Image (cartoon, rainbow, N blue to C red):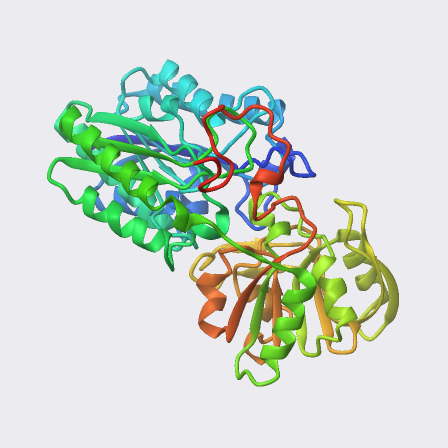
Length: 498
């Protein structure tokens, strides 16, 4: 008998204090991510991308599964999802699921979720979505894939038969996670009964830069996770690092275990939590003020044979920033950082002005600052223009179509250049530079609006990496944000009041 599996997804990483809200239109339009896909075209639209659902599709196709496409949608990290957007897309998923149930048997459901969605009316967006899906589907086996930056909740764990987060940050294993969620779904259908489950919360924020799995402390934490997950009878040990910018009760890191018995699930979750707690002090992080970061980069670049990377992480579009603050750029100009390129400033107005002026023109711009009201006045020479359409080439974005709208490469001071785009995207792929004629390896200094993801494609070509602090809504230290709704037991820094 051919299995019939419904597949869909709804992804958003919500920053409660970001400057720009997330609307329905943000999910519909293509940008750094595919546009909303629904029904018959969903599989073709997502099969060859690096999104988790691509891995789920691949496993399903190899298993000879009949896929029943629902709705899949994502939008760039920003302020919480507006009620209209959530209600419309959640309704699509539930209506599509009702439709395939009406048409025939459904043996299982796979959903590609993020896990850090906050909605205007719901702190736990995924928990609410899964409540609605369960109301339609009953006890049909259901598995999901998650971003490890999810703020996993008890409701999410209770409403699915297994959840699988990515194991890496930078996220170079997204298709693997989707594939593993589909594999566990097939196992769950075959075994005929749910696994036991356990849920534990970590009671301190793990700063985002400390979550990088390429280096300690997170690399060793994930090694510990792997060893526990390898125990006989443990189907999945999900360790999620948390997204510490969401102002709701269950924000933060958490652990879920699915196993053959309750004792096995409890032991797996307890042992992982004990490891994290023993090593709490190692998750503290330090960053460098922008002026010092630029000075360090200039000094290193004088003798380096590779580019120096400055991570402008506090304006990271991948964490809710708008990608348009100019603090680091002002320092590049002030200190005369010859051979530097900043990627990217999200400023559609300036990009349009560059296109209107044409290559070779010298124009005055009020560059960036649209989100924080602090633009930078520059006289720019337009070096190159682009329509902003290209395909990702690096480990995270490989094969993904990217549409950033009218874009320009401009020089804003001798030796200081900026890529200006019309739609925000985290600087996680070298194609952002190469598509407009900049060879990253030929630059002395690269400023990247990213905090960790850039390491997947840029760290191999870097002489050094400097994490800078400059204006932006995604602080390295989330304890500086005005939270109101966190649980009282949660510590906002590792070792705070410990």
